[in-house]
Image (tube, rainbow, N blue to C red):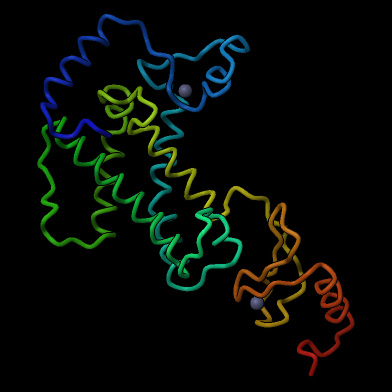
Length: 242
Ligand SMILES: [Zn+2]
Ligand SMILES: [Zn+2]
């Protein structure tokens, strides 16, 4: 997002002139992932005029999901960070509990506000006074609303829309990052026996993990421990080993 306020009108005029002289672009969205990896394998899909309708719809959907995922990150930062979540950070160095969640949320919000300011500048909308104190949630909602309203223009006509780090690509990348961090991309297997520590039916196992985890209190069980727990519950044995 280099195009901010430096001569935005000139950049926009140049971009419009270039577009008029050209055929529709190959859609820069995820529909052409296979084509980008191997242009011989499949024909590219074209945009209308830049992004195709399905990638544009997907981007809108992802954009509107971001506030809820940011809230989930904040909850994660406030309460606990499970060992599995902290491993995803991949920094190699130990992080304070919740630090990863907080920094992901802040990076995404900062990026969205940048696109908002950029769009306001290019479309000659009233700029936001960033010096004025504003709650983070208010700023985020305002940015999402603005981006959603102008999404068609952003995807089809923003000077940087075709760039790998353009606004649409960034929204999709942030969404992917949040999905991965919150582990929403993984199949979850639910277990019927209640957690031995908090007694809630909240035991799950994520794809690729060996242990069974309580979503409520974070207790980890091996499969053998769970099997024993399930057997005890089925037999109506005392649940806390009392
Ligand atoms: Zn597409
Ligand atoms: Zn529990």
